Length: 272
Image 1 (cartoon, rainbow, N blue to C red):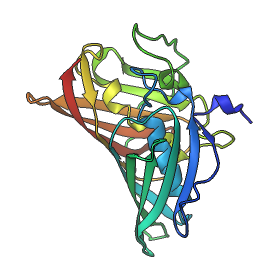
Image 2 (image 1 turned 30 degrees about the horizontal axis):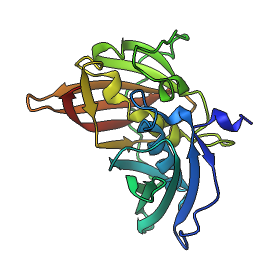
Image 3 (image 1 turned 60 degrees about the vertical axis):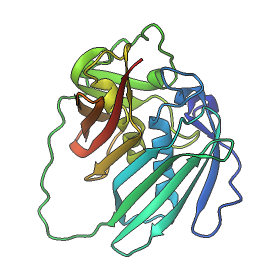
Image 4 (image 1 turned 120 degrees about the horizontal axis):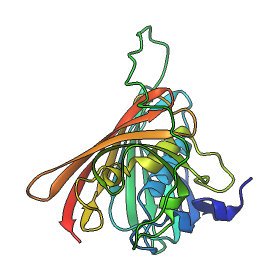
C-alpha cells in the first residue's frame, strides 16, 4: 500500500456525532490537496471527491448509479483536519437524494454536495452511445510550475494535454490521472476519480490569462451517464464570459471507453 504521505487524505477517528443513517469521518488533509495560489487552501477537486466518497458509503446501494452531483463551495476549504458526514435526504426504491457536508476544524460547513442516486435494472432499452474519447491517452509530458504557482494538487495529478494548456487561452482537452490515492490505503472509485478533476474545467479552458484574472466557481454540477472505468479521466472544456464578469465553464467528461458525463461551473471573473 502507498505511504500515508502519498494520499490526499489520511483517515482519523470517526465522528461520534453522526448516528443512525448518517455517516461521519474525519481526515487529515495532506499537501497534495493544496491549490496553486495559497498553501493554506485546498483545490476544490479533492474535497468534491471526498464528498462523493461519503455519498457512496451512506446507506450504500450497489444497484444504483450516482447520476447527478451538485457541489456548493461555501468558503475556502482549509488544508487541515476536516470532517465529512452524509445522510439520505429523500429515500426511495427507484430514486433517492443523498446529502454530504464537509466541515473545517472549527466545525463550519465549507462544502456541501447533493447527489441523486437512480436504481439500475435491465430495461430492454437500447443504449445510446455518447461521444467517443477524443484521442488515446497521450505519452507522458513534462510539467513545470509557473512562477507564483504552488505544487500540491497540480503536481498530484498527471496532466496529458491533447489540446490547449493552462496558459493557452481557449478550449482545452486534457487527460488526467491521480498520482496518489484519495484516501490512504484505498483505491479510488470511478466517481471519486471523476469528481477529483471535474472542477478543473474552468482552469484548463480559461479565455483570459490565469496570471492576471481570477475565475472563482462557487459551485460544480456533474451529470453522470454511466460508471467510470479505469484510472484515466479526460475533460474537453470550454469557457464563455459575459461583459458583466460572469462566466460559464462546461466540460464533456470521458474515460478510455468514451463519454461518461458532463460538468458545468458558474464563474465569478475578476482581475487579480
